[in-house]
Amino acid sequence: MEPCDACGMPASARPPRERRHTRQLALVLAAVRDSGSEHPTAAHVHRRVRRTLPRVSLGTVYRNLERLVGEGTIAVADVGARPLRYDPVPSPHDHFVCRACGGIEDLPSVGPTLHLRRLRRAGHRIEAHATVVYGRCRRCGEER
Ligand SMILES: [Zn+2]
Ligand SMILES: [Zn+2]
Image 1 (cartoon, protein in one colour):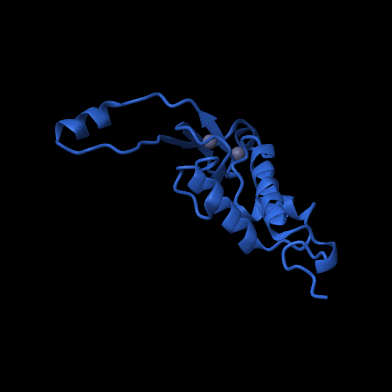
Image 2 (cartoon, helix red, strand yellow):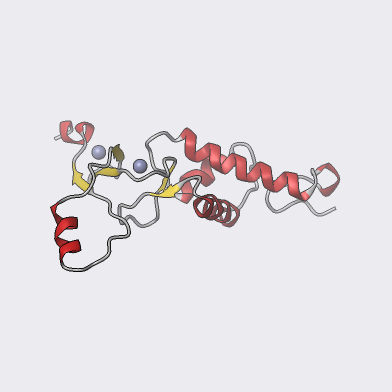
């Protein structure tokens, strides 16, 4: 019997499709939430989920991440990073990005800035805004 691509379990031992998919989704969500403020990439999430489901593919992890982002359960951190960094906090907030280690720290959103006021005055419509502060984190700064 063919083992399942995602979990490696033989079909006879497999839970029904629906339940398996729910479990994958739950594990992907748990991996993002357990990462705290790490803001993991899909590869990081994949590594974590594989501890429980050794045969799960990166593609499956991606699909589940996309679904969670689509539902608004998690977010993509708006820091312009590639590969994308996933954020367990879906509500708007700002970020501090360390240029040395790539660490991302959450900052509370400080609300509209002079830029927004100026843009509105110029007739533009604001749909979202995020501030990213770049620098070296405390740990990386100390290494020099
Ligand atoms: Zn750093
Ligand atoms: Zn964040």
